[in-house]
Image (cartoon, rainbow, N blue to C red; front, side):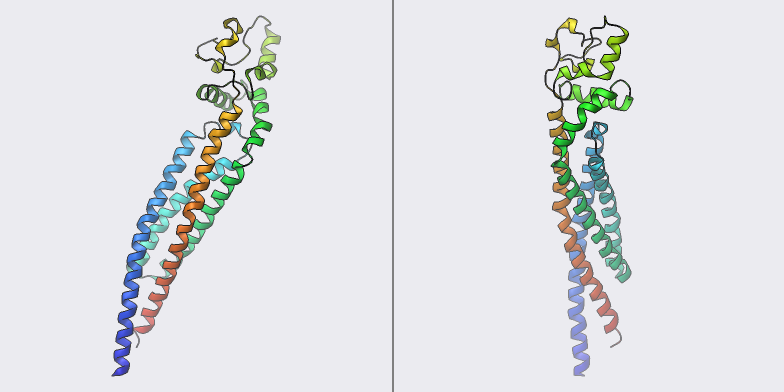
Length: 263
């Protein structure tokens, strides 16, 4: 009799602990989904708003960090569905899978954040080394890079990598002058303070040309995006640790319930 009473009391305590953990995991999953949506929104924003000048960067770290962010957001939403399903039907296999997915997400977010912060520290050196060469050798010959350079010079109101005189050494300008010495264009039209066709001819005077180089503006634009990716990735990855703990506790509770049912 006493044995049965103790068994009933133990099952009640297990049930209370299990139900509490299920509620906690439901709440956790709600906020978990919100972080997944935040990752997707941030990744899409950076992809469509900040990747305009990606062809001007000499490294693939920035786009890699962005795609990791997007992939993590989608994976979070999928994992949340698995976690809620496993909690609802009390399926140990689903919960173990959920815990493993959370571990993968934790590692992915941490890697994305670390990559972003590492690249943020080297972006200045990379742009100083590669931007001028890319602009001087590829403008007018590579359609993607040409558009990126024109968009950058218009948006940031800049000209050349460090100054507008950089363009005098460009392959495009040198060939144009060789073919027709009467040509007065010395910079692209996108360098003009007020952009219009042939506004960049020096017959209009260099006063119509933006004097500032583009390196600093592009550096700041890229750094802002990388800091955002790094902060989100490293800041939210710790949340996954809580989910791993809760799901592992539930797995034990489900196991205990199965064993106690034979008593």
